Amino acid sequence: DTAVSQTPKYLVTQMGNDKSIKCEQNLGHDTMYWYKQDSKKFLKIMFSYNNKELIINETVPNRFSPKSPDKAHLNLHINSLELGDSAVYFCASSKGPPRSPLHFGNGTRLTVT
Amino acid sequence: GENVEQHPSTLSVQEGDSAVIKCTYSDSASNYFPWYKQELGKGPQLIIDIRSNVGEKKDQRIAVTLNKTAKHFSLHITETQPEDSAVYFCAANTGNQFYFGTGTSLTVIP
Image (cartoon, rainbow over all chains, first blue to last red; front, side, top):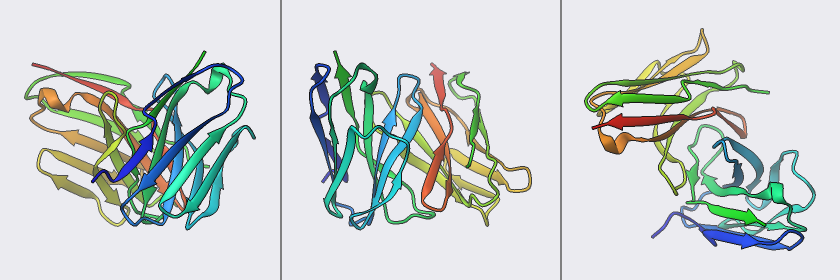
């Protein structure tokens, strides 16, 4: 009965490869997010979708492309992976915004070698 | 845009003592302030939140205070326990966006 689940938990890949991370929420929320957490633990918003519509698209390389097939799913595809993409990626969902808390998944640790 | 500052970055307390983490924000339009606890290998989990029309909120050993005039809010944990050891994040919500502080690593020494 996990609320926000993302797969895989760990992803190790080589530079130049293309990979995807999947996220699903069973909370009935309308809004989903992708956050990147770097080695210093800083949480940075990447994208947000509300009812399958992109509402936040921060300054992220074009190699990152989110896809929301329905409001319960938000996947992240990354092309031509670079060393600097190594981080923990968190999916989250909320009823809102505004003024509704984020519910995070447990993260995907991406390591690019 | 909004800028959230969080202090201290690390905090060590003896078990049973209190811990206080402080955050400031810059955008007066921010109106919702959640606090998250992140344990090793897990995602941030909401522990308490406060809306801008409230000055203080308490939930057992955890309390949050908000001073809208000064644009700062604080997390107070009383009677700390070793399981309180984690990284804590404050956040400010403006419109569609959440702006996070840089985190406080709390260690409770048994």
